[in-house]
Length: 147
Image: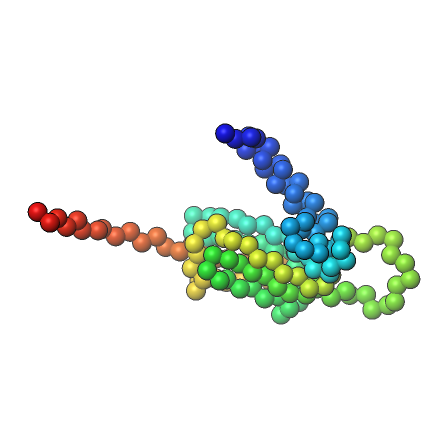
């Protein structure tokens, strides 16, 4: 039995994602804001076309050389670091929303992909990762009989 219809379930997922962006992930020890951890996760979108998965990652202010993308089986992992651009000593912070420091984010891909064809492009603060889907191979299986 389903507890909620699909739209309510989607809205709960969106709320969870917003809370994680504000407070850090409650599922990992030392959630960013609550425990003073400097870890954070860049926002990303995952799209699917008939031929590939497309991952769009918001990495504004990060040199592409400071980002590592690893495809391992069914998992995509992103690691990197965003440094603060301010070099002056600050006396007081009045408002702060931008995350800085090291980040790491791994997630399971929804479909099998071909890592050999993976590519990425950095433009205007976004990292676009293209992951071609693994080709489905169908084959006939002969049926043998002992008769």
